[in-house]
Image (cartoon, rainbow, N blue to C red):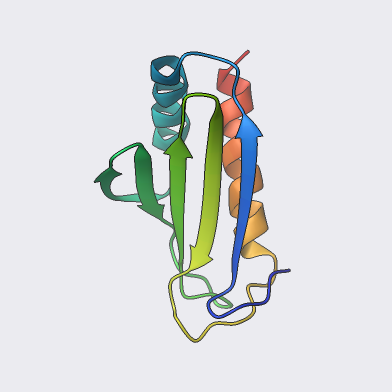
Length: 103
């Protein structure tokens, strides 16, 4: 469970492949998740989740670098200082999809 203002969680992992291959897998993983696309920034995919009873919604940024991938999930409501573990679960969900497609 993350505490912050707003609450967030991030994970950085080495991907060990060409950046373009990693971006293709990220796109496929995101397409299979029920998240809403906000847009694409240079080297980053920008998505958000649906809100729940406990959380307003979360913004998920996925940065793809030459050697690593960084996934950050942040509560969208600025005053939400407690995320009930939702940001970590978002990242775990993404990496589960990513790893399934990267076999």
